[in-house]
Image (tube, rainbow, N blue to C red; front, side, top):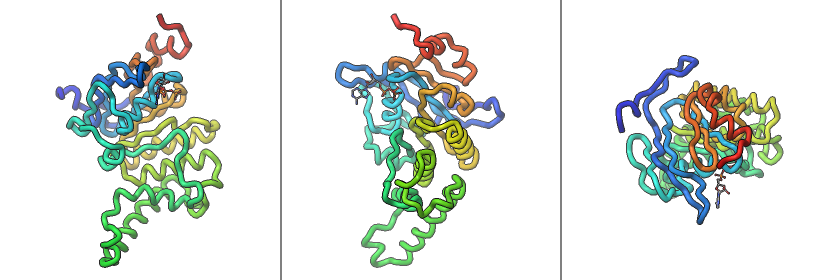
Length: 273
Ligand SMILES: Nc1ncnc2c1ncn2[C@@H]1O[C@H](COP(=O)(O)OP(=O)(O)OP(=O)(O)O)[C@@H](O)[C@H]1O
């Protein structure tokens, strides 16, 4: 990696962003004859909020799934923390500190908010059942530590009052917040959000935006999110990658991509030759 690539930068609002955390190099992903991603490169820097936007079918979900290890691209390399990532199962990617939320909420509906968030701690539990049987003290200590992390996140996301409520009974916006809480319980280095504002009303979108900014600010978590509504992410993101028909058509600050003619055309639906 060149020095330039590892350098950080200062955001428009004066935050200091670190060096390169993840780098996608010339990624191409095909499904049979369909090219979902064509030769895309971009990086994600330590501590930034990075958005990937694009119209329907642009390839955003495919890209998120490459980052999370769910899809393995036919071409290209994924670099994480300065090393080329070998082919990995999604759970191994998660163990490297990458957590995600899903567009269609993936929570245990019958379980309480607290228990759902606790499932985010599973990767952190070191004692196994055998150890728990013979070494009760250690297991108890670990349980207490995990509870402390989870309670802090529950307070932070202001969901204390519903901690015992089964998730199935919650309105959509709150479910999304619980999903965010579970992802945060992983204490991720990189948090991936799959259309975090999809299906929300204006007030819920404002709440979610605030929580995303607060998470980044309070925990220093690097955040990458995909979204097809351009307006939503512009206030939130430090840098934005724009995809269209599987290709990268823009990459830069919100202002830069807003003024990029290819991006304007893609969003206005100008036909492609
Ligand atoms: N599992 C799959 N099998 C075959 N084709 C797929 C698969 N997943 C995605 N595609 C195709 O790849 C292209 C990109 O799809 P993708 O879902 O990544 O786009 P997107 O930008 O996330 O769209 P949306 O905003 O509608 O969710 C589309 O043409 C889609 O039909």
